[in-house]
Length: 153
Image (cartoon, rainbow, N blue to C red; front, side):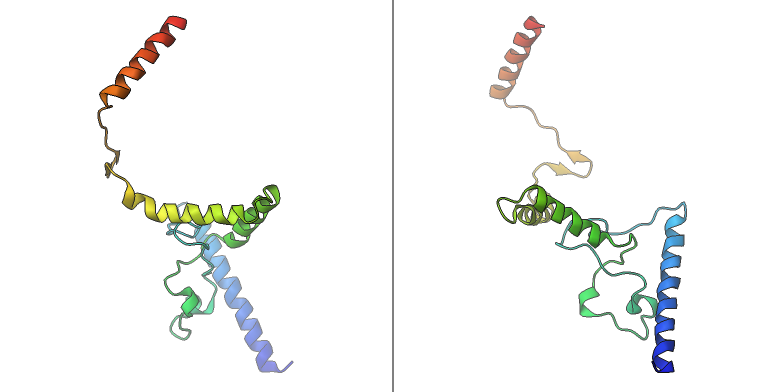
């Protein structure tokens, strides 16, 4: 193996070790690590972030442009979350083999709903859901049911 290739390989390994130890040190601090969506679990996309801190474009951004795959992707500070997520989906597929692909479809539906739902909510405020009066038809039904239950108890 030519000496230059060996030196580059060693430098690459050192960069990974340095970036990894820096991340692990920052995770060990008492201050919580802040991160966005799709880092700990897919929330607004179908994949978790694989933009690790030790990748060349994160270690030395001046000399390594960010590949299109990683543009706009948050930095993954929590380790190999993708493997854990993929294992969860595979486990679901083993537990529920029929209908085929039900776990993947459920995940697609969940992600789509997490994107769509906040926009569709009515009476949604900054502090939660707005209280509204129960319609008279429902209210009287609830009251009569409550009175019957109290008599039994």
